[in-house]
Image (cartoon, rainbow, N blue to C red; front, top):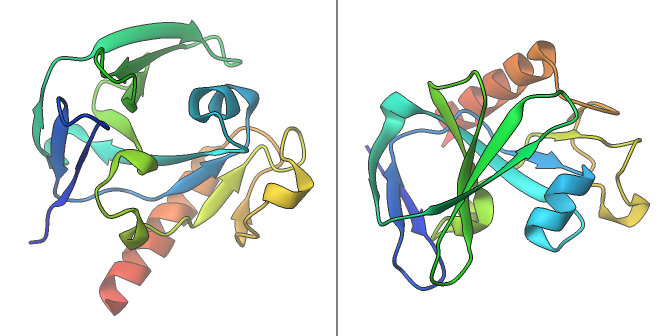
Length: 153
């Protein structure tokens, strides 16, 4: 089984995962601020699929629109956001796609906040999308799409 590896810019934090659920482009304002870009690419991973995670991180906590706390983990040396978790979902982390060593192996299969906050020129044109916050239906569809893509490769 191929591991998907990555880490921060300076190499202090490193990770290896066995499998991810999907890749999602998020156009919310918090992701724009987190990345300094037009959107963020999120890669949810079940804790059981994290092979390794080394290096100390610093955590920043904010309250999301949903009212849940988001715990961002970043490298204290270089500032790279590596992963985050949502309050109430202890079985899953969301990794920043840009922290992967080979970002080209990741394919976004869905988008959220497409009509609420997306910049018109920054839309990816994914078939699976939500005008606002993601929901269970979108998540299930993205997992199915990712599994279908994995079977083809």
